[in-house]
Image (cartoon, rainbow, N blue to C red):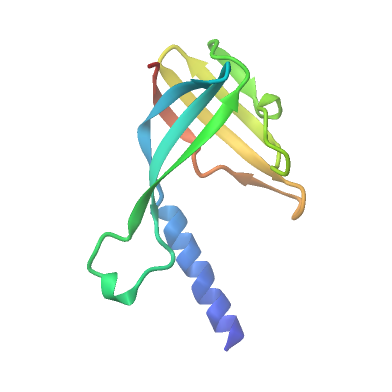
Length: 128
């Protein structure tokens, strides 16, 4: 019975990840002299009230990734500043005028795995 529950949970997580949809625009933000790329998307709620099954079970999510500079070119994942306790990135972010390409991997040192970032993809870069 325990194996069946784990299998069902794994299937639900897979469905939720597949139903994650990133917006097509990325936004530049600055704060205290630091530059961030903000990405937005829709995610599927994994936990919900059974009475809400007819309602939209998604929510808007976002991530802000600090980058060393806003210059065109490639930023290596290991050059991206992270907060204490976060995993380092591998891969890259590429900026080409108004095009942003995110291809990052999370270097999970606990499980010794590289996991693709769910925000990977191409975006139109909006410079506000």
